[in-house]
Image (cartoon, rainbow, N blue to C red):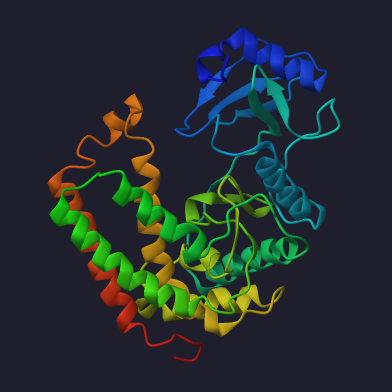
Length: 327
């Protein structure tokens, strides 16, 4: 029987976690918001609150999930504030229930940080620098490599082969993505890739009163350029956020040296993220929840907007004046 989330009744969730952890739980199985995975809050009879995450079948292999857990555990070993997976009875951090892979984490809460001071931006940079220092210790061989050859080109082909748009829109889409990819391939030459968070926007950085900042949600970790985890923190495009970039890098370089040449990638990476999201959505079009959340996805008007956004982003790339500090 192929694995599916429909088997996750409360009793089965509790049985799976109790078996893998060797502890007794109360009856609490409170679902938490998550479109990709299935996430539940549990409680041990001793009162400890836990979070269990059942991973969407087919999204990541066991080895890819292990790469993610290794990264988070490496961060925790270097005292970077993260939420690390707990050890299970099998000696690892990944359990399995009827073909579904899952992990268990301690519950840790926080709030999104307020960014009203220069010091706040430096603190963000320091946290990212510490994550990247831990990330530089080893590779993640089973994770995606964030490079136009291995991500963007296949994603564009997926969208074109899937006939998700009219011939006219497909032609426009192909033309603008060809231009973006040509620049991207050139700028990615000699760029070092290492383990990074991959989805390091501000909602994934929490403030824990009395403790400081904590990074969460490493689900999308990749081998990529470190600047990916910097530009996602910015409130606007690179040229309008020069002050914030400098402050982030002040904090960052307390722990990791930063190659200024990677700043040339910021607007290219923004375009690559647009393409990535379109390709990811194309794999979800038959999902009922996706159809409910994105009712106009794939319409003529939808593709007009998305292609216009890519054309606008292409011009932003052309306007990028090979950013470097000092400006």
